[in-house]
Length: 123
Image (cartoon, rainbow, N blue to C red):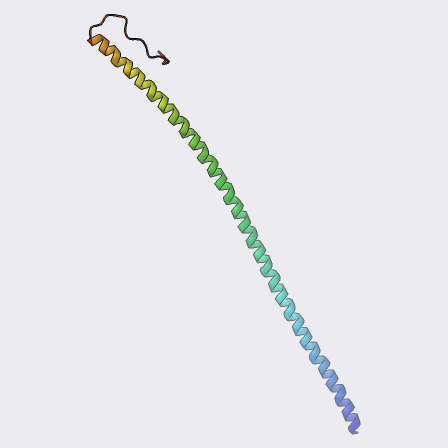
């Protein structure tokens, strides 16, 4: 009888061990899958955030390039206007000098012909 109880106890312990092992294994598998799912979601979130960052950086680069192009065009335009302004001022000064020469010629009572027109300037 004692041997039968021992055999039955051994079987019960083995069965209990198997059940406890199964429960522990199932919990570990569930915990592992939950952690993997969380890691996958975090990785997807990081990937999505990185894609957004990349998109914003590309957009910022395009805006900067467009702004640089506008600034370069404006610099070229201003340089051209400054050159034209210098030409006009030089021309104006030549006409003013000629007008003073004509006035001086008249006030001094000199006869015609008047002083020569400035070289290289349109009449």
